[in-house]
Amino acid sequence: MGKVLLVGKGKLFKSVKESIGATHTDTSNVETLDYDEEWFKPTRNLKECDGEMVHKSEQDNCVYLFPNSLFDGINLVRIFSEFKSYRLFVVTHDHQYSSLYKKMGADFVIFSKPECYSYNWLLTCGT
Image (cartoon, rainbow, N blue to C red; front, side, top):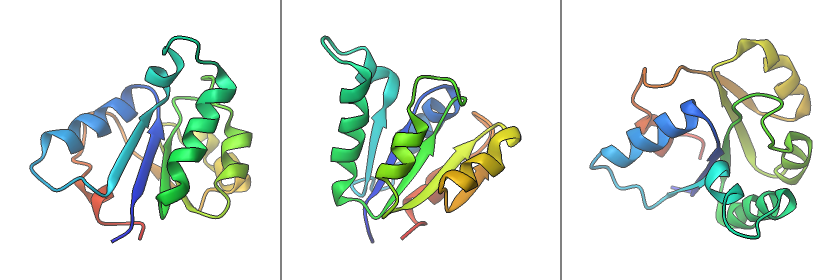
């Protein structure tokens, strides 16, 4: 099974992190990058956060991106261009921008709500 990178911010992303972390399933194939945590590190700037995402994705087979909104500080255009060689899944609670995510290069757009589901399926799919 390949490695999976989860990148995001906001309530949906935090819900996914908590759901996966609360299980007794082996999560050694999953790496998470919380955009809010990276942003608030001392001397961190937006370009460094984007670079950290790209660096962490080098060993991964697919990337799940959890944008909070189009205007939440994540440079989606740069991220989509950097992740072109990976299977890119966008997980969002907002149906409004699904066609835009697909046009930007998402292989799949998945709709979900925070705290509604178990996200253990992320551990077995996308590879």
